[in-house]
Figure 1 (spheres, rainbow, N blue to C red):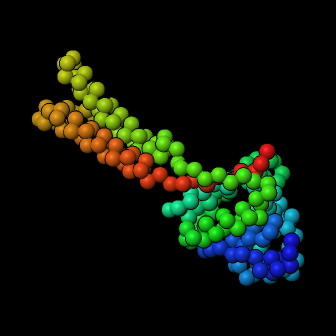
Figure 2: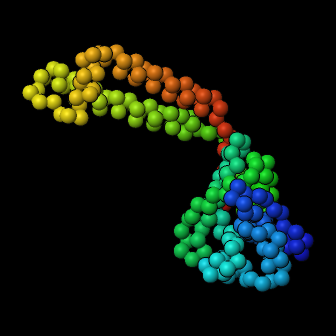
Figure 3: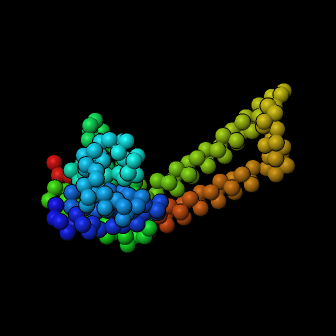
Length: 219
């Protein structure tokens, strides 16, 4: 690691008030950027201890992620300040997701660019549009749940209407009274409105699909 990088790491502000200090071989999430820089410069803490010892982490308030432990980086190119780092635990080898939320999209983009510059020899870089099904998944899921709720309400009412049971469950009395007075039209209109709104939502999400970035460690 060069002396200049050790003395002057790049810094990026996070939404939680902490700062990322980006070195050539690792990054540190620090509550106090100046104090953390001095700790590293003075050698007051061992880098391996900072990664492995929870007491050292609690004492310094710093968390370290070594580049060699990173397996992947995921981010949206625009409209999002978050970056997801997939990190392999130093001891168990288990993959852990570390989410970083930056102050601005610009800072996030600069961080990703500089980080990739450090690790590019061992990683692949891919940009692509959000897949169709992923972009419309949320509206379709919402539509499914809302229509299912309407159908669940309607089915017992239809059963009661055509079978004329002697007793009607108390929970269904308001619905039965509503249907007797208003008919089924309001319910079908509601289902139509729900379908229309979710359909428009799905179209909007498809049209405004974001560019995704995936950086993965080479095999």
